[in-house]
Image (cartoon, rainbow, N blue to C red; front, side, top):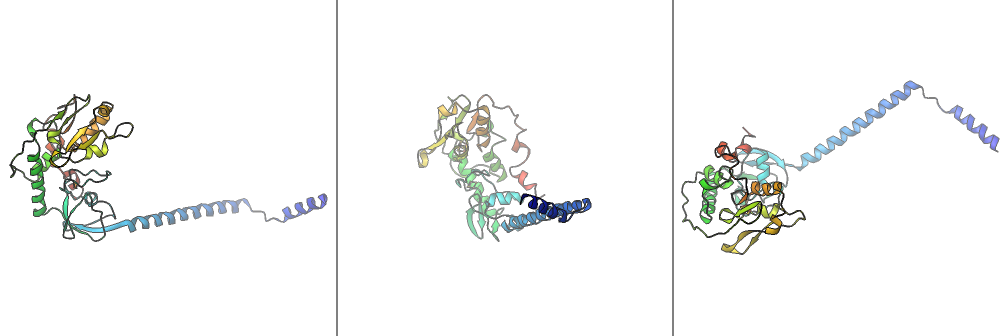
Length: 284
Ligand code: SF4
Ligand code: FES
């Protein structure tokens, strides 16, 4: 039996077709081509899927395209249209608290930082009615706090001040309230001046300690609402994190100690170009 199967095996092997070397090369090339075509088809399918997520919308008469579901404020920015913001930061869950981004979406006033984009939306943004509303919001924020720009370290880098310039604020039309607000100066790296806080909540949402705890939090209600800092956690912040807290604050409420006036007045971000011009230049 063993001899028979040996002989049978040898016989069968001799009957197998002998593929010449050239054919093997051709076969390899064919396989390579097949893989390439497969990849191209995959890429096309991926492209089509991405395209199907894209929607068209019109903002201030400009036809735009962006990803469905993203917030209007981000979609507009991608298309070179600036919508002013104070409490919004791309990537953060929106707070929708300042309302300076209010646009008319299909005729209705909506916050652009909390409204997801849908196909065919008609958005009005840079129109006198909304710009007047924005100017009013800036004025109210100025009179509700104690903002003395010439003495503030954030001057020239302050978004509120820059919006005041953008919307041509001269003297606020409302009476100053000059509220009494305490500063927190006894943390090693951060100086918190509540007089300038506009309650945007960015610091609360973004600045965490090493173990993920909130360093900032709101306390109180209504007119007594104020920003607080956890002194113990604040003492554990790295220099980079303390700097980040200062940078994300749209006004001069959070300042990093021992870093005051490192950047000369006149050379700061909004000293050089008006707020929003970095976005608007995309389309120019
Ligand atoms: S301290 Fe600055 S970042 Fe924090 S809520 Fe006030 S304005 Fe916003
Ligand atoms: S930026 Fe939209 S509500 Fe503040």
